[in-house]
Amino acid sequence: GLVKTFPRDRGKVFKKRVGSVHAVDGVDLRIGRGETLALVGESGCGKSTTLFEILGRTAPRTGSIELLGRPVDGTWDKAGDVQLVFQDPHASLDPRLPVGDIVAEPMRARRASAKAIAARVPEVLRLVGLEPGHAGRFPHEFSGGQRQRIAIARALSVEPALLVLDEPVSALDVSVQAGVLNLLRDLKERLGLAYLFVTHDLAVVATIADRVSVMYLGRIVETGDVDAVFGAPGHPYTRALLSAVPIPDPAVERGRERILLTGEPPGAGTRPTGCRFRSRCPRYAELGRPDVCAAQDPALTGDARRQTACHFATPATT
Ligand code: SF4
Ligand code: MG
Image 1 (cartoon, rainbow, N blue to C red):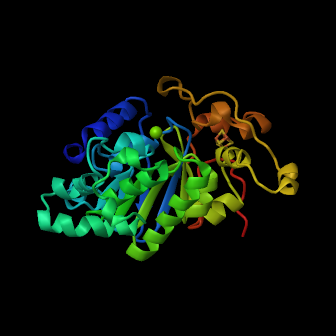
Image 2: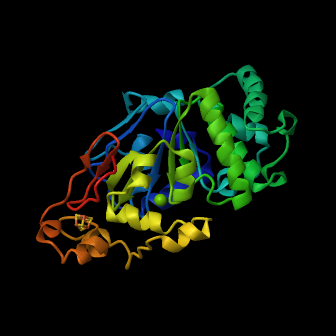
Image 3: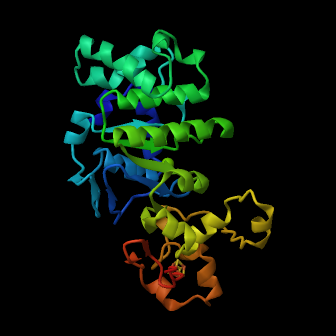
């Protein structure tokens, strides 16, 4: 299984996360070659569980996960076809190892030869904009942004087809974020990579993703092309998330709707009947609490560009 190939610290991060998330059901995820799908939602919405499923550590209960035209199974990890980059490059890099050894970890786990490793390490360091001559240095000698580049180099060492990026820039200074996002965009172009980009930051989604899936309590409530979803969000939850994104232009900022969500997502035991967003949905309140929201869990419907799981979805613009 995957866990064997991870250094100790990362295994710990995983265990901590899996205990605190909601079960995921009915999640269908498809990512094509060269595509970036952003998975968005508040913490505890099921994103981490979805990651585990993608990595083959837990089987999807319902729904399906298909990447680059293949269903996800154990062969992905064996081949190194999917690699992870975590949020915090301080926690995910072993401080006792020189960078060259860190970068080679996934290759070692797959029994690559010393010769192959010696050839590949300088290559991937160059790919992420670091000096190959710095392979002997230790993580603490690098800045946060550089450390995240090291983590990306490690992921690239085994030539993956897909990178799963779990909040890869949210621990970095805003000034450093842009550099790492540019690097990711550039690598995607040059290497034909696909990304699953997990984030709560919609401004980041707008700059990096082709498609977006918004999760709430273990369910995808809206999905589609970033332009279609952000241009005309159909789900009240997506609308609320988008209304909270600051826009630098004060003129635009003044005229915007601001939707405040009250309360916390309910725990697994107290999930409302019907639509699971009902207990926090501003539209449900506005519409006078229609019965259908309590009676029926809305399915994702729409066209190829945008699909929304709401009985009263705001129409898409055409
Ligand atoms: Fe809100 Fe009803 Fe739509 Fe659910 S189905 S998001 S409760 S309006
Ligand atoms: Mg999480």
